[in-house]
Length: 490
Image (tube, rainbow, N blue to C red; front, side):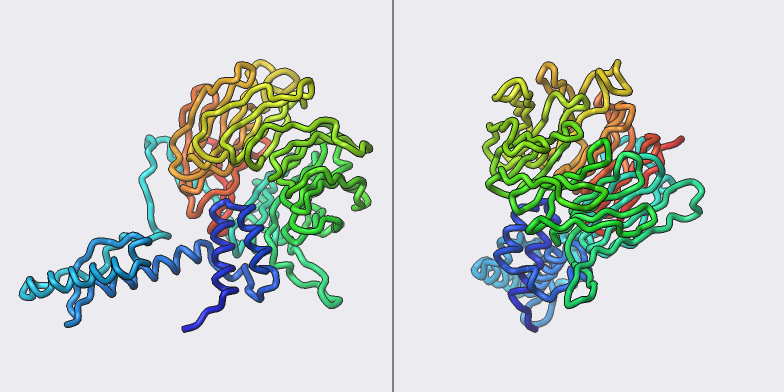
């Protein structure tokens, strides 16, 4: 048996990614030269490190449970930390041997399989009314990706679902009624090497449809943004970032694309030519997220704990917001472009206004890092003007919170998830919120009542949830390579 440090490093790197430690994964990947290893990540299954640790734990338990005479006794399951401590293992072996000597004449009725560490098949009953659970015939599972699927997004005009994965592909799934079975277009992310195109073997980290649904933009760990047509053709490749792209967004008009990179910069791209229109180098650490305020102004956030508001044509930020005490994971402008929400590893959610330098609200209620936030499509100037504006926050504390931003208070805490929540999405009418967690569950909630309306348990941890334009289907992407669509029509 032999293994290399490269192999160990790759499994640790993949574990960090799957656990949501994207920035730690990036830093570890750079320091351990992951990109220079010859390991094809697309062939490594999800949860590989946990799986091999689990087998090692079971082997250690077997060493303890089997006596010198070959007889086997039931033993208490070991914790992982106990299993790596030689003194603990030795004392457990001695204790078990002593028991064996006392009860040599007892019949042995165990098969040594206590199932205590079955990672992949562990299922827990969802604490919901059976009428809430979405039946399997209302779920379409889309298989094809060969690694975890970090992101998914519906086309704004038709039922095409795009997904992006660690297998260095994006895919477009046709979920329209006219399609008898969901066919997939595979968008392979390749790079030039020695005059030929080869797979980049890098994660697709971000994707976004333009406003009329005619083009899909993707961002990748290979440092390139790409624009694709709905029939899967690569229209242009945008190369200016020096390192992975973490986020990417079209503006409403559809003439510019905005991207954020580990190279500490944000770039506005001309979508028609594929050229860099302006590069903004104001952050002192990797830029993690961007969001357009208008067709030419945007906000960006970073691990440097700062938020900059910039405008095309200006050579310095219009505004810089400081107040977070740890990296800022996500930022979102409200539907009117007046208030900016930010969430951070400092466990707070902050609301900012261009009219003042300090935050309007500092919302402290979560007990762990807040991964993402979304505004409801409600309030003045939206299609749902008679409903209050709400902000949703998703946290590693396994909860989702709904906030009345005007008053700065939490109106609902949604507590059915049992693992970190990575994604939330409002339905277009603002009446429902979908949430996806690493507990493999997609929950759908009433935003008015804060109650659970529907629930579905998938086969992998959920990275992303999204609603289609009609509001009758929810798409989700998962850590086991699956993408699935829930049909909510009665």
